[in-house]
Image 1 (cartoon, rainbow, N blue to C red):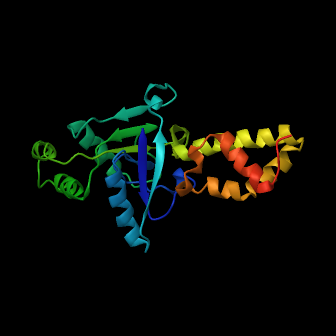
Image 2 (image 1 turned 180 degrees about the horizontal axis):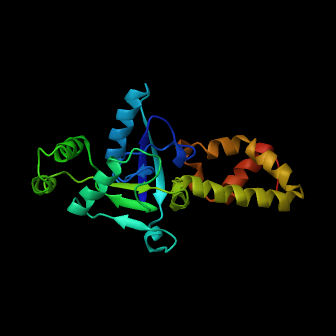
Length: 228
C-alpha cells in the first residue's frame, strides 16, 4: 500500500528516537494512505520551519498485520476504544510508550477533535455526546510505526521508470563486459559517464521505454564502437 509522510524536509532516514511523545497512537513515525492529508501536514509544518514542506512516499507492507513478529492494533473508525486509546497516549508526555504495540492504524484526532478531547477531559462534554459527534467526522487515516522493528514494514517508494532503468543498467554493463572483454569496473565507468546514460535517466526523454538492446546500440554509436 502506498503511504505518505508530510514534513518540512525530505525524510532520508527514520529515527524513532527523534519522534515526539503525546501523539494519537504514541511515539512513532506516522504515515497515511491519504496523500492530501500528508500534503496538508507538510504545508503546515513547513510553514513553521520556513519551508514549503515535503511529502515523502513509502510502500507499507501490509503483510505486517499477519506477521506474528509484530503486535498490531487497528481501528476501522472512530469508536469508544479509539477515544480511550488516544486519550491514553495524548496524556503520556514521557518517552516511554503507554502501550506495547508495534503498529497502530486508525483515524486521526485532527484539530477540531483534539479540542473536543480537551473538553471531554475537562468534563464539559460527556463521553456519550463526544462519541455521537465523532460519527459525523470526516474520514482520516494514519499508521503509527512505534518500534524500530516495525520500520522494516515500510520502504521508500521507487518509480517504475527507476526499476526499469536498473534492469537496463545491468543488461548493458554485462553485455559490455562480454562483447569487449573489459572488466566490470571499466564497463561501469564507460557506461555511467556516457551521454547515453545521462539521457536515459532523464525521464522526459522516455529513452527508458525503448528495448535495452536499442539503448545499447545508442551507446556504441556514441563511443564509435562496433560489436565484436
